[in-house]
Length: 418
Image (cartoon, rainbow, N blue to C red; front, side):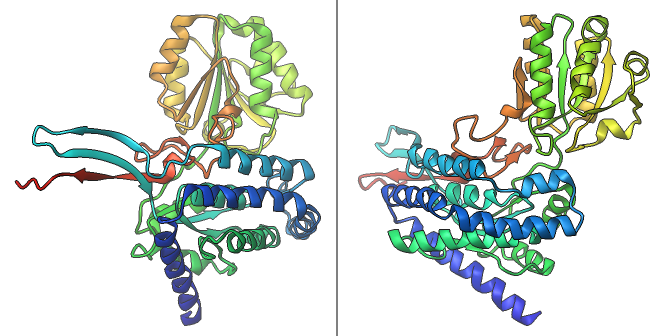
């Protein structure tokens, strides 16, 4: 226990020192590092895939679900997407030093509100090793040092990514401790970092609900988070049939094991006779098990009766709840009751219905005639994301560069006194 405490304190102190140094380093140098990371991801593809194969074999032997194995898996195309995401981050404007607003007071003082880094980020995540690079890229581009603690199921992949981070940081002259991977898989290490608010400014958990609940309960610093991704697609009475099919299938089936995949289909009773049969058929054709309310169950062959808990469940798999609602107000009430304020979509040709849904659904992202899968940092033009927040302070939705900053006031005078 004492050795682990010494280890975690050393990591945290090194991160704080790196954050101080980063605050003085130009955006051009940080961008140079990002471009080197992207190139190294391409050059080291075979080593990264070999390390990932070790994790996949261990995960299969440990009985990980197909959804978790999919999150864990690296492929050449996913590595190329990752490299491109890093290059996109490099191309984005540097948020550090941006003047958010400013003005001059009657006494001549100039008041400036300037964007600055948060400081040290403790990022704890599960399964998806590509997040190691996303998080490091976003944090360092925005002037923050980051402590990366991935899940034990991805340890070989994360260590391979960490070697790229360390190599490239040294090459371009950034502090070598700006991005550190926690090599210990001991759960107590997490608890120790969460108590180090003297060195760590914010914690960001990304993973299952139990992880996020633990971090929220134990952290002595602010936490940026979301708990569940219980996302809805509401097919309104005026919905175009093909659009409804396309949006629903993409929302549910394009990648079912992620937080912005749809888990519940709500359909207006006036559209159910016209559309529900085809929507159900298209979902079942792709292997989706449908768990249906009493009104939709008789209309869908091979369906399963839904329980109350089904509508509160983030499946992360090819399973979907179905409910017929009698109005848009009913759909909104259902989303308020059962949703998680993550991502909810409406398919409609009625502009008044779209406006009502936009106003009344209080989620981090509200989609009108578009897939829930678009709630993503890359798709929103942020380059990548370190997570999606359903909180209201200080960040909401995909968290990119600006969400990794705060601000300070700079006051410029000419000898004024109060």
